[in-house]
Amino acid sequence: MADGAVDRFDRLSGRTSSDPSHRSETQRDRDRILYSEAFRRLGGVTQVASGTPGMLLHDRLTHSLKVEQVGVSLFTKLKADHPRLAQKADQAAVAAACLAHDIGHPPFGHAGEQELHALVTCDVHREAPRPYAQRAEDPCPDCLLEDGFEGNAQSFRLLSVLSVRWSAKKPDKLYGLDLTRATLRAASKYPWARGDNASKPKKWGAYDCDLPILNELTGRDSAVTLDAQIMDWADDISYAVHDVEDFYRAGYIPVDQLKAGQEALDEFLEYVESRSALGPIDPAIKQTLGELLAYFPTRRFAGRESDFEELDRTRGTLLTRFINGASIVGSDLVIDRTQKALNSIVKQLIWYHVIDDPRLSNIQAGQRRVLREIFEALMEPAEKAFRVGGDAEPDEKDLRRLPHELRRTIQDSMLQESHYTRRQKVHRGLLDYIASLSDADAYHQHAVLKGREPVGHL
Picture 1 (cartoon, helix red, strand yellow):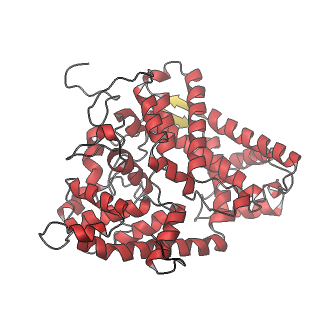
Picture 2 (cartoon, rainbow, N blue to C red):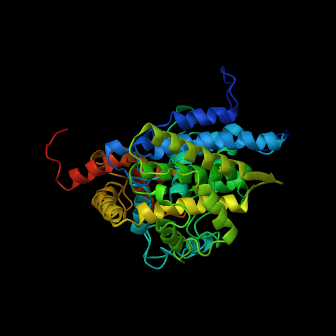
Picture 3 (cartoon, rainbow, N blue to C red):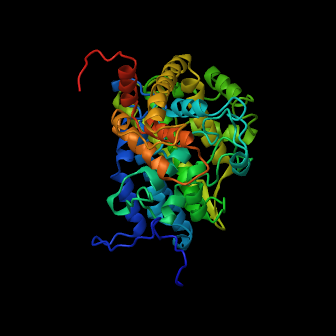
């Protein structure tokens, strides 16, 4: 490699070091993610719903571990079909990205993500984002942060800025876990800023303050790498298979009734073909769906040995079909049209029977209120401590009264060079802090701030 050239296995900081265990650079990335505080926190973060203890629903941690397993299995299958795959993709980078793909998601799943986004965007730009260049040139006076909040962008921020690693820490620069370019790109499903991809206006992979890092990695190329495409399909597979398994076991999804000619299937397909879901389904795909349903359990789950056997058969059938439905053409992952459609249909079972259930909607309304009131309660003292609106240095006495982690995330935000104002840097740091909480942390923090903690103690 020529002097000054950039290699995909270079680290964000440019720092190099030997490894006595002889791991590859991307294997080291995977282990850094696995041992990070941010990854550990995922054990306390909702995937779809938290449920009761006996339900044993997947949380973000167990989901991420299974995404990694599916991602490695998918890579192994693709490598068997394409012996030169290692020249285009890296298995350890895929595994690392699978572990990290949800690492920035806030408490309470998608409901929490939506609320944090709503808190900092105005009514106009919440659903109609402007491109980065436009908002940098002409900031919206009604948005606290027009680049909003998004789980994938927060994951990128955690990996490249917020996470603490001793060997990457410098007084004037932040590198997060100091991962390789290969792993950071593998973890980037949406390598563009908010509003810079008109085909996916609700998805973006970096906030404005982190865009220089993303541009340095991609060279302003918004193409999704093959590693990231493999990770994304592994996530889709895991979400469809494991979440349907969860809610069948819990009694919410009547998979035993989804047989051809049964009323439950007809009602579900009517929903799937509505404008609010997927729309019209090809008759051939409906026929394949009917054939697939033959492998589904034949009765309601009750914990019998035969129930677990049927569930195992269903899981194995779905995983095998979806993994085998992937192939590589050029530098892209291509998913068989039928398997991709079936995956989307299976995921709609979760929407139809769980996410759209009014019981979950009521729970999520309360969870959104928890995050909103934490944000509102901490915004004023944070702005005061960091002297927003003035030229004075932050007051140490006021700083000491902020939660330690909040103080750190705002200080990290202040360190970054961007078009953000001082107030916006405080708001970004406040979002970083709230997004770092577990579900239980958020409930506890809310109770304390509202004076509802029953016992006063340090």
